[in-house]
Every structure is written in structure tokens, then in C-alpha cells.
Image 1 (cartoon, protein in one colour):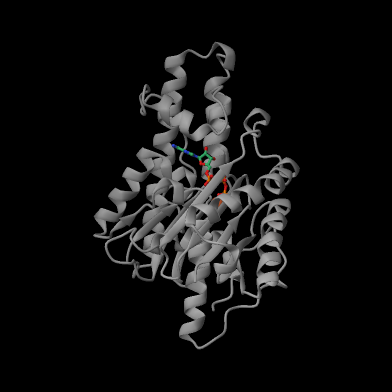
Image 2 (cartoon, helix red, strand yellow; image 1 turned 120 degrees about the horizontal axis):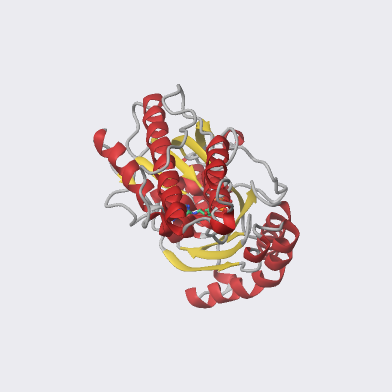
Amino acid sequence: SPLLAIETSCDDTACAILSPDGTILAERVLSQTGHAALGGVVPEIAARAHLSALPAVLDETLRAAGTKLDDIGAFAASTGPGLIGGLIVGSSLAKGIAMAQHKPFVAVNHIEAHALTARLPGLTPTQIGFPYLLLLVSGGHCQCVAVRGVGRYERLGGTIDDAAGEAFDKVAKLLGLGWPGGPALEKLAKEGDPRAVDLPRPLLGREGCDFSFSGLKTAVARQIAPYGQEALPRQVAADIAASFQRCVADIMADRAEHALAMLPDATCIVVAGGVAANGELRARLEAVAAAHHLPFVAPPLRLCTDNAVMVGWAALETLKARADKNLDAPDDIPIAPRPRWPLAEVQAP
Ligand code: ATP
Ligand code: FE
């Protein structure tokens, strides 16, 4: 029987129903809109919004799948990392239903869910195998991960200051663009010259695969200062946007190269997170993969950003890995949501 998954770790209220083989029977994502005017996600507001939206989103998902709660065989939810209020709302509902229905509940690490998405059946002609290199680039995360198996992850490197999406958002703000800034900045960059403005490339060529973006942001601010944001000519803004984007792409490509050197038996490169929407970045990472004769897998955007399908799929992978070892489904009801839950602390099934 199908599995129902809930995702509420940030500002998206999402539910999905998957059949045991990973076929998506229904999926719904409701993105909270109120945060844009406030320039970022306000945790308390996000938690309350999940609380009011979740029952209807759940109902719609069940209806779209043509299932009733009684037909669901297992439940799953993100229990971290993320904003604690939202995590409590989503996981408590999933646990409550699982308890009432006497069905297993699987607590899913949100990053693990991003990491395993690329193995969803149908995404690639044949399911990608382990180990693979994951570049997780979103508003809250920026890391290179060696995915060695279900529950077996190794963080190869990550940002020492801002996440990639955060850098896009902050630079977009400096340029007077709206929030979230990534899409607006990419659009403006199309009108600019990526060689017009000389920007630093922090950690480029450095050993390992850590990232740093805060110096870059400061350099952009310095370019804007002589004009003042209000009087910034459009062409200068476009040139800065294009140069910044090129700079981030250069950094990503270099860091991916170094990460590959740390995982020489990688079978492919996978990218996930909202920043994976960026065309220049995708193209550059694809080129890195091609140079190493590796496939490049970028899940469709709706599965790259926060969604419940990935949570459901990660839960199915966990259930299957446990069944393969003749273990029962996990009893995750006692697992409390955690704002911080590093991948390294995820237990292998
Ligand atoms: P997380 O998933 O880490 O909890 P999040 O919800 O902020 O955090 P996502 O929804 O995956 O992350 O991604 C949003 C981020 O992606 C934002 O920072 C946004 O600016 C960035 N982004 C979206 N589209 C683009 C684009 N075309 N180019 C660059 N960045 C982009
Ligand atoms: Fe996420």
C-alpha cells in the first residue's frame, strides 16, 4: 500500500503519496507567499502558516491520489534540519495519523531526501548507483556530499559562510531586485557582460571543496557604492549580475572538480536545491561531468526545491534497505524534530 509524506521544514507546505515502487500517485506544494515582503522567511509566521495550510494540502493530495487515509501503509515526514516550528507541525501530524492508523512512521532527514531524489524511478533511464557526488545548493545549504548508499553520506566540503542561494539573494538585494533574488538576478544577467566586473573567486583552486561567498558579496557592494543603489544604471547592474553569476559558476565548477578528486569512483554528478535552477550553473556542472565521462543528473526543478516527493522516496529507500536486511520498519515516533541534523549523524538502515 502507498506511503504518505509531509514536508514542512522551511516555507513550503507539501504532501505526496507514492506507491511502494516510488511511483508518484499525487503531490502538492503550497509555497508561502507572505515572506517576500519581509525579505526572508520569518520562522514564527512560517510555522503558523503550515499549521493552517497543512490539513487542506493533505486532503487535496489524498483526493488527487484517489486514496483514503485507511489505504495508506506508512507515513513519513521531515524531522530536520530546518525551522523547528514547521518541523513540529508536519511531523506531529504524520506521527498522529500513523499512531491512530497503527502504521509505521519514518523520520526523514531533509538533506538525505534531497540527496536521494536523483534515484527516483523514471528520472534516469536506469536508476543511478552508488557512490555519486551530490552538490546541494539551495537557500539554506551549500555542500558537496559523497552518497555511498542509503544512510551512508559523507560531507566532503561545504560553505564556511553563506549558502549559494543566500549569496544570490543578498547580491540581488544589493542590486535592488526582489526576493528571492536568484531568478531575478539570472534574468538581469542576460543583459550584462560577465567579463565587465572583476570579482574575487574565494577559495578557487584551494584544496578540498569548501565554499565561501561573503567576500564576493562585499566586493559587489563595493562596485555599487560609487553610484548608490537608487542611481545604479541598469547596464552596470546587469554587468554586475552577469559577472557575479559567472563568478559563482567558476567557483562551483572548481569545487566540483575538487570534490570529484575526493570521490574518484563516483558514478555520476547530481545537483539539487533551488540554485540548480540557474542555467549557467547547470551548464558548467554538466561540462565538468562530461570532462570526466560521467552522467550529470539534475532532477526537474519541482523536485530540486523543497517538496514531499523526495521525503516519501527517502522513506521508501529506508524501508526497502531495512527489509533487505530482514529488519522491521523503523519505529521513529519517539524521534524529536531537530533544527540541526547533520548528514553525518544519519543512521544507516
Ligand atoms: P533549503 O531547501 O535549503 O531549506 P530554501 O527553501 O531557501 O532552503 P530552495 O527552495 O531549494 O531553498 O531554493 C531557494 C534558493 O534558490 C533561493 O536562495 C533562490 O534565490 C535560489 N534560486 C532560485 N532560482 C535561482 C536561479 N535561477 N539562479 C540562482 N539562484 C536561484
Ligand atoms: Fe531543502
